Structures are given as C-alpha cells and as structure tokens.
Length: 185
Image (cartoon, rainbow, N blue to C red; front, side, top):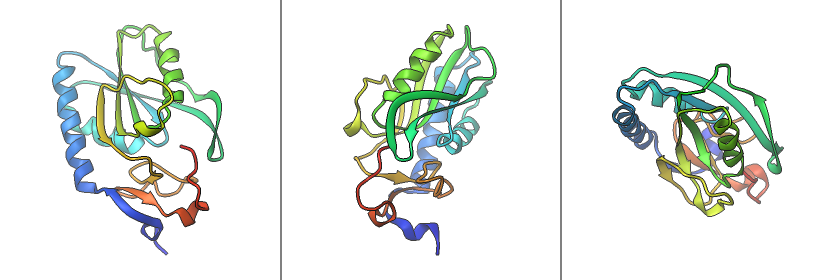
C-alpha cells in the first residue's frame, strides 16, 4: 500500500509548489536586500517549505527552529505550549516566521506576541498555505503561497498522525482514513 492511496485528490501539485516557492524566495531576496534575516520555522510541518524557501533566497540569512503545540491528538486544546524555543536571540533582527499552513490563527497569534517580546527589528509572516475559512484570529500574512479551501490537507510537510509529510504535493486526505469528520488543524 502506498501513501498516495490515501489521497482523495491532489490540490496543489509538486510543480506548482516548486514554482511558487521560487517566486516567494525571489520576493524575499528583493525585500530583504542588504539585510540578514532569520527564518524561524515552526516545527514540524514547515521544515520542507523552509528547506526549499531558503535555497530559493539569494541573500545572507540564518534559521532557527521552534516547536509549539495547541493540540492534543487532532483537537485543539486552546492552550499553546512552547515545546522547543529559539536557540539564539532575535533582538534587533529581522524575523521571518515560516509556517506551513495558517488555519485558525490562534497558535500563530500567540507566537507573534511571544516573539514580539524579544524585541526583533521586524516580524513578517510567510506561509505556504492560507486557509481563511477557519480563521479565528486576525493574522497579518505578508507572503502567501496559496489560499486553499477548508479541506484537510497533507503532504509537503503537513501530516496526519505524523504520516504523509513526505508526499511531494498538497493532497486532500480521504475521509475514510480519519473516520469521516475532519480533524481540527
């Protein structure tokens, strides 16, 4: 059995992702010319996007990783926990928060306040996927890969129960895999 068998449909194919990431990298290169931004990836889902995005940028930059959780299983708990914090100071730095998907926005809203307390020069947000239908918190998205409908998506770093991250495209997971009612997230 292949992971592809659990995909109901391919929402965004690998070629479209590659092209859009190249465009976003070029835009960041232009916008941050002469600066040295730090890309803060929110683990684990954004790792694939981060890796491709930083290779598409032609400017000095560094990366740091954070892991946050507001989920217990597939349900949001409403409580945000920092599981892995930044390893270096961002004070005075231009920070680009790299997200795989922005859904309700609650976790990212918390994270923006948290990072803002560390006195960066600026904070901008780049997301591969924006799912505005589920938004509960206003999020200022500076760079957006794709706007998607309210479907449960997997692939290109996004998972369901830690599976499917390695799919090269964004796919819609078959409802039979998760029991019919879409999990939150």
